[in-house]
Length: 145
Image 1 (cartoon, rainbow, N blue to C red):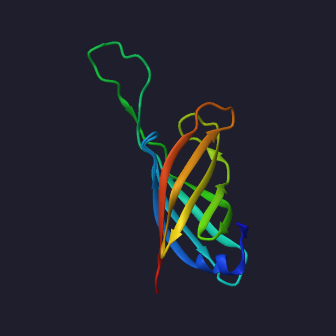
Image 2 (image 1 turned 60 degrees about the vertical axis):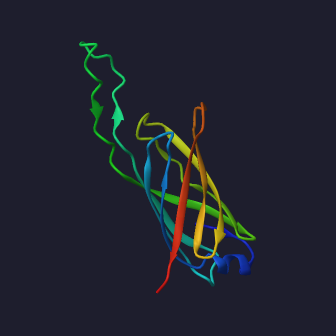
Image 3 (image 1 turned 120 degrees about the vertical axis):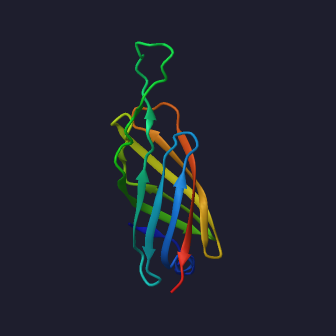
């Protein structure tokens, strides 16, 4: 993934980062893992999205019966595509991926702040066809040797 920033800003992100993300709106959660070299302008990273089961929206014959839950979609790895860092603030995008609920393209941007060895912030996902956006929170901590 390309990383844009001054050499000083890029050095602040050097290392291996591990964390998680979640969205109250969608019930989705997962892991974040990425590594950045202090001498380079590129990094490697992925987000593991681990969706939860979704209530079935189909009408059931017995009105007193609760809707059944459908099995949770399989977890999927999503590539971090681009990161910009300026003065301790980070922003970027994920490679578009297939929404496990509607099987349609989903586009995600993120932003956050670096404080010590912790990156944290918010993300926004939008469907290609439009409609309401979905928000969530994420945090990643730099692993120390």
